[in-house]
Each structure stands twice: as C-alpha cells, then as structure tokens.
Image (tube, rainbow, N blue to C red; front, top):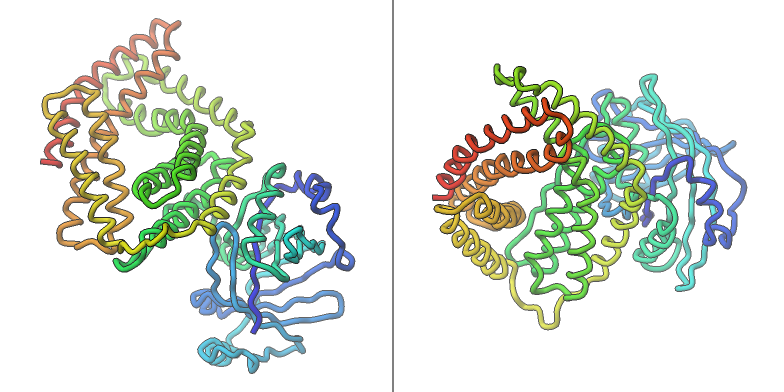
Length: 489
C-alpha cells in the first residue's frame, strides 16, 4: 500500500503561462514528455463505492493500463494524505493486493456490479523540484476535462506531490507560488467532481463543517480543529464569491471570517501575541473587502422585497428605490470581481494553514479543554449580562453593543456544543440566536438608512422613499428590541 501526500491547487486557465514562467518552475526539471491520461471511474449503479469514499479507476497512458484504488483522505487547505493501491490492469480487476481487508472484501463482493460512471481526460506536465530545504517535490500541471452524462467540467490544477521531506514543505512551496499567482487550495478531487457531474450536482455555498471535540483535548488541539473547519468554509466559498452571482457565497465567506476572528479571541490566552494581532487584523481587513456587496445584497434581496409587500410602499417610490439599490449592488459586485485582493484569498488560506500546522503548544500546557471553555464562557456571559442590563433602558447604540457581545457567545456555544451539557446549552443557544436575529434586523435597517443617505441625496422622490423607510425603522425598532430582550430575560 502506498500513501500519497499531495497538495492540490486550482488556477484559472489564463494564469497557466504565468505559472510556467514562475522562477521556481523555471529551475525545476521536466520529467518526461507531456502525457495524456485517460481515466475511467467505476462504481455500482447506486454508487456504493462513492458512499464508502472509495475511488476505483482504470488509467490508460499510451500503451500502459493501470488500475488504482484510493480511499478516503483527510484534506485541509488542499493538503491530503490517503492510502492508494496501484497495479497493471489486464482487462479484469484484481483486488488481491489490497492489505485493508474490509476494502478488499467490499470490492470483491461488488466486482460483478461495477460499471463505468465517468471519465477524466487531461494532459499532464510533470516537473521535479529539489527545494533549498532538501525536500523533493513533483509538480504536475493537469489540463483537460471531466466527462459524465453528456456534461463537461474543465480541469486546470497544479498538484504538488511529496517525494521526500516533510508535508509542511508542500505548503511552504504553495505559499511561495501564490505570492504572484491566483492559486486556490482545493480539497475536492477529480473523482469527487466527476461524481457531482454524474449526479447533476453543482457547487453551492458551504457552511462550516461539524467538529467533534472532546473535553480532554488540549485547548490548542481544539483551536486547530475548529480553525481548520472555519478555513474549509472560507475555502469552499471563495471560488463562488469570485465567480458566481449567488449572494450566499459572499455571505458564507464573511461568516467564515467572523468565526475565525471569534475563535482567535476565544483562544487568545494560549496564542502567541504577535500571531494573534496579525491574523485578527488580517482577517478583519479581508472581511471588509466583501462588506459593501453583502450589505447591498441584504438590501436588494431581503429588506426591500419584504417592505414592498406592504400595500402602501408603491406610493412611496419603493420600486424606483429598489431598482437603484440593485444597480448599485451590481456595480459593487463588479468592483469586487476586479479587486486584486480577491485573487489573494488562496494565498491567505495557504499562509494560515501553514502557520496553524506549525503552531506549538504553550510551555507546560496542562489545562484541559473543559476547564478552558468554562472560563471563556463565563467571561462572555458576564459581558452579555452587563450589556443586557444597559440595553434595558438604553438606546440604539446600546442595542448594537449588546449584539456585538452576543455574537461571540453564539459562536462559542456552536464551537463547544459537543462538550457542553445539552440540557442547559441548547435553551441558552436558542435564546442567544433569537436575540441576535432580532438585533440583526435592527442593524440591517440602520445599515440601509446609511447607504440610502448617500444614494438618494439628489432625487426628491427617492428621498421620500428613504424618509418612509426611516419611519418604518423607528416603528420596528421597538418590536425587535422587545423580542431580543425577552429572549435573554
């Protein structure tokens, strides 16, 4: 059984020439000519192998035929390790060399049912690079297509495969390449993309994957596990934020940034101070890149459509106001697509993943996660209680401060749900979520008012719509205030 350690990076076809011209690729040695790889993936009619996260393929490379079996891998920031078995293919599958008995027995049992599902056809250029550290890496540039059910998906990716050295060397190399290239780490294999195409699925917005913590973990181990899950959400939405009109990609990407910053603040006592300061600021700056588009998405797709359901709004020029906001949103989205920092998402992800892998435990760390969490939640709850008391008789600014205090408590409860007593935690979490949502509506109305002030200043009819909206905001403020405070009572 072999075990691959590889890092997969996607890139636009338009950047392939710049990749080939990169100084590191210029000093790398070609490994043979460009090869055409024709791969056929097999499964049962109900995709039982896919359900077990096993990939079976045949590969034709010139006159050479191979069969390959790959099992589930753990992939973070594109870096993956997985067991693999490869041998010559002679027209019939042979699974006798597979050491993992459950995998071997499953494949042998299902062999009569196996049939072609999809193919990948691509050209591969391979280079060999010996790094200054002594690590040896294969760089494989793949360009071609995935074909299934009459559909087609393009392939354009760079795979870094470790020949010798430490896995972290691949990440360092990727960070260097991403300094000048729009590379994005990818945790989705060609096989996974093929199955999606076969099933007629498209890539949609991604929420944070679940993390199963245990109370005897060290705080640092828990921090890393949660951070990698937040990064998976970031990575899973970055491509859609750059290439799709679906507003949920930007929304989920911004949530990933908020979660990461909340996580940093939660674990600040065990993190290097300079490291905390750098990433807290970097993530805040990165989130601001998407703020204008997200705010206008909320206005055009949620807030104004809801208000237009009221019968009287047509008389207050709301249709014209809605069209103005949609136009402004489209301009903001175009500006985002053209912003150079949008192409930096991959490098930021790679940098953070690299540094997380290298992050070491504090000296003499003997505190369990359970005791650490208890102290952090106590602090967050005290802050919420203090601001709740102030908001009882306060104004809009006090409600905003309460919302700011509630959001990290909400994220903390989500992070640590698996190690907290469900009987007490779930009711608290439900109350916090109810309050956050109510105060979020107040914040959305205030945000809309600020935006409209700049958009409608020269148009009398639209000023009328803005004034009417301000009146609605005042009327709804008290309702949402009551909902939020009642939930926290």
